[in-house]
Image (cartoon, rainbow, N blue to C red; front, side, top):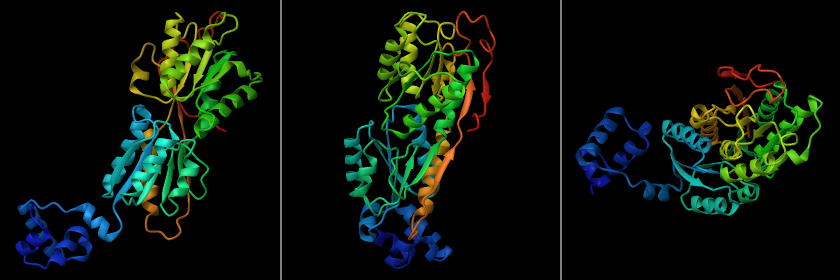
Length: 353
């Protein structure tokens, strides 16, 4: 393997100048840097990034912990972070917590050994405690909020989005609207539950806790909850479901099909999150869409903007959601109305709060 000394010799510069030309090009004259770069390329030289990081006690590495990389929403978050980091010359170490606080803590322990310059995390229920183990590391919380003081957060308007989705169902004539909600120790699930309740309240519909079941954001949780909610008599079961994330929505759709309930004739469904399968399934799903890529991109931009600042000011960034009306929602059976039952896809701005 060629060394930095070999590069310096070929470029006719000192070893220190060759090193600066490759790691701190702003400190070297352009002509000298070009000569060093050409020598490195000719020799096939690759710098030992880890060794240099250990010497300098800093890296250009960002840690990213997402809750479920198999969920298309979290995969898109990671894509946004990765692209922004690449543009600024940073490398991303990706970890998956699987919604498990213990796995999240292990990821943070691993990261600490790699001297990251910052951390982006989609919090679990344990994040607020875990971040105390990284007291001097710049952190941005993505998608969710742990309540850790002094932390920048990049989220969407979960409460407003849930209100909009529920109000859409109310506007179609539904009154028995069930909700499958996520863990009630996660900020997104708490806000979406509150948005659902607020929509019912503003429409004069009593909140019925028997129509609300919580899960752990997985397809199986959505399936089990939907089976329980939809297995009752036709005159007591929900005529519509609002589901708190895309994975649970898959489970709810599978349960409805297993129970031979037609969508939307027997059951209307609104899911939180959009995806390709939501657009291509039969019928295409009405959803509350989130700008997942932009969430990840902005989280990374905010983190990089904080690096090197002695006292960075935490920010709270909240992006809007969008109601996309497709074919999984319509008036309840027997209502005598066909309005909006067969509308083409519509994109609506979220309801103002």
